[in-house]
Length: 77
Image 1 (cartoon, helix red, strand yellow):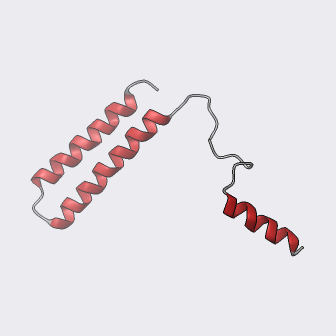
Image 2: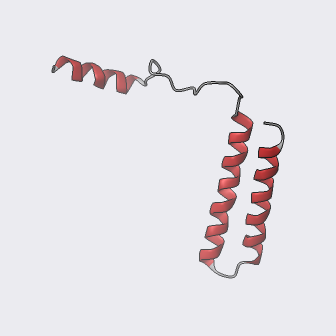
């Protein structure tokens, strides 16, 4: 991926901070904070992306609560 996700996240954060500094309305400031939060999501996605990798969620990796509920459903069949 390179540095493009990091640059995009930085650009979105700068736009959000500019909007936050120049805003006079509370609603506008809250919207700018939401945009700043989305830039952190972009950064985390850029850091965690691996080319050719699969998703970490597999059908065999279920939490214990889900496994127990599946077992109880199977008993009633």
